Length: 234
Image 1: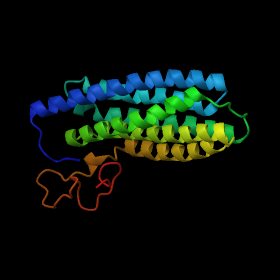
Image 2 (image 1 turned 180 degrees about the horizontal axis):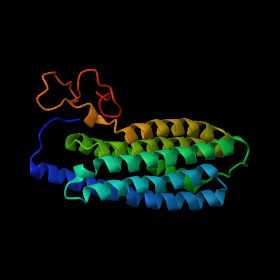
Image 3 (image 1 turned 45 degrees about the vertical axis):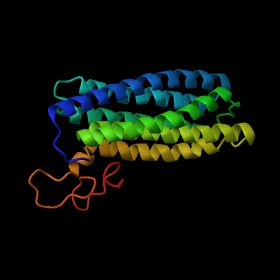
């Protein structure tokens, strides 16, 4: 995360950008969730329905960022915002894990869903762009909340890719087990990220304090810091 002191004008622009990115995320995921749940119900696909509900969780994470950055002093809401985002990670993990186990235990085979394949393919393109924009903004602004929200979006990117592969394999080869197995991996990652967000283990905790005589590394982190997703990505 950047240790550069921002001018008030630059900080205000970054705050506005964070808000715009949150509004964009909320709007897209709301539409994505509605389409995915409808398509999942039509195809009897637990994976698609779960993906749609995950989109609504992503909306809640974006709204937390909106709540924080509509404050005159966003930094004052940082800790509460991180806790709320952590809860959304736990909710995401609980849903995906439960749904994956139910699918593996033989809840029934889903029918092929061209609409589901389409929405998953679009998300694989859109989500990485949002992740990149959020992380770039969060690092420059020094906001652990924006970085944590970008990780939530990154998990949704992975889930979109897994859903896409699962739907395609189910449509072509009938491999209905592929998606729930990968979903369990995503659930485990979501739990890890939720714990980090709850504890506040973001890059603000890695940054070199003002006046510290130790040299920061290239990403602005203190010596030996390898915290994800900011400091280890060098």
